[in-house]
Amino acid sequence: MQEGAARVGGIMAETETIEAPSGEQRHRGALDPVMMMLAAMMLAIALTWIIPSGRHDRTSDKENAPVIAGTYKQLPKPIGLDALVPHAPQPGVARPVSPVALVTAIPEGLKRSAPLIFMILMLGGMFGILRSSGALDAGIQRLIGISRGDVRILVPVLMLAFSAGSTFLGMISEYLLLIPVMIALADRMGRSRMFGFALVTLAAKIGYLASVTSPVALLIAQPIVGVPVFSGLGFRLAIWLLFLGIAVLVVLRAGRVTHPPEPVTVERLSPRHLGILLIAGAAVSALVYGSIALGWDDGEFSALFILAAGGMAAVAGMRPAHAAHLFVGGMKMMMLAALLVGMGRAVEVILREGQILDTIIEAVSVQIHGLPPVIVAPIVMAVEMVLTLLIPSTSAKAALSIPVLGPIAASAGVSGQTTVLAFLLGNGLVNMLAPTSGMLLAYLAAAGIPYNQWFRFAFPIFLLLTALSVAAMMIAVVIGY
Image 1: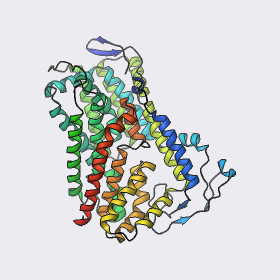
Image 2: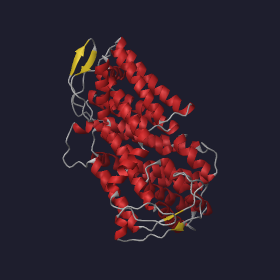
Image 3: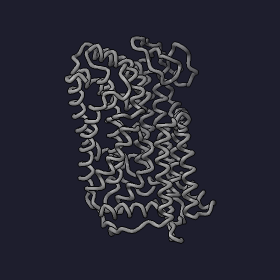
Image 4: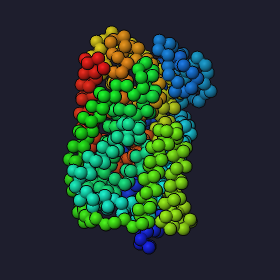
């Protein structure tokens, strides 16, 4: 972030416009995330011309309503020059998606992701005020001082906390706020940006992968296969602890010193800084409580961030006009992240319009029918991995795949609980790396880290965790999980 700051009465007052993190550095050979999403959209359009269209009946008219197993019907799909021009949908007839969707699907994806996008922008605005107040820098310095800058203490404690929020509460988008914080922490300690980024991202992704009690995944997936919600958590807890331990070791190995760290000092926070950090902590607590107990969603989160930003500005003694300037600057920081979330949704819009997702699932279901359960379980996980490249949304994928794969797996002797585990592991593994995941690209945009750099870092642990997940699926079948 390019910012000129002057110390005014103990408060950092920004004098230049905040720029997006992605604008900080130009990495030679880096893959541009917007171009990656455009390439994914072009591939999705091409697939609608190649793969036959079809659909299952659904339990309701809602887009993400669960499908009804055994109701797949292939739809007629005329292929010709006429299909190059967009047409209104006709009942019982499919069409390949026109190349025009490369531009029309983007605003549609943005519209469908609007609540999440607004939340991301408001989060950026709050962070702009928090960072400019100087309280964040002071809090990080205090944290380093308390731990004496020992990564062997900081890394396990922080990763356990972040991953617990993800695996028990389903928190993922909320961690966008912490990525710049952890990168600043890494810089103060003389470590790389990747160290700070991995500390948050690996912890959050592994927590989401295990989903010990995550309501986001389990409230949809487990009722579909007829098992009690949150049941079977003991096995998932063991997987989470094992995978998290591996991730902690990976991050510690990546924590070598890359530049001189700042001197370790233990200083008391000023009253203003303490007040601002207390507001930030209260906002996080309210977010967790509101999402669990009050059913809050992205709209309420956006309002919470606006309210917290106003409180921080007041405690910092900022003029209203200056606070508004900083808030807008913070929103600019997250603009690319918000765009990528909408473009990720656009890929799903194209695939749904082409009506090929049900065809893919039905084709796989036919192939795995009759295989032994110890083979079927890892195959179901592999299918979910492929589907995650096409549909990063956890809830949408659960409603689409589990009603079809669940009965097929059950006929082979794979329990409903193991089918849900296959869904969780396949979904979580690929979302660590999927170039079609708008949220992953939003994380990278917030950190200013190119996708290919993250891929090189995360691919070895992805392979290791995939192998362990296959073993876990086989063990689950053997022990009758």
